[in-house]
Image 1: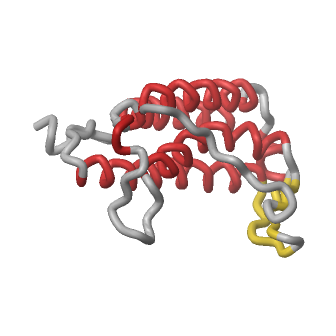
Image 2 (image 1 turned 45 degrees about the vertical axis):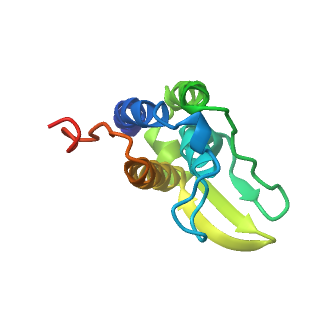
Length: 163
């Protein structure tokens, strides 16, 4: 039951994410709004990878990013990011099919950094955290695009550009 709801939500969120990623301009990948901000390419890569986190969280029980550094996807333009995000999300949707509520609620997902526990979640909590990260960083991407004067699509209704 929970997996069915997560599938529906992930499909909806990634449809919006696809529209946003496709707008990333190839000639602005190094741009960043502030020295402490990620570059547009790094942010787009991060948004892209989150679609794959769902299958990763289901397949892995513990990861130590201090010992196994994560490498975000790279692309030359928004279409490339969107294509990779779609592929990663399809893997996650397949992984979610048939996952029991018992697995989601009672199996753990632990993230460490050099042996120190950063997160210790049920699989369900890890997936909900991933969904929150997707929504958060997609909104951040929307702000980056807005600052570049690129009209953005609405997420949960029309944007100011679509009105």
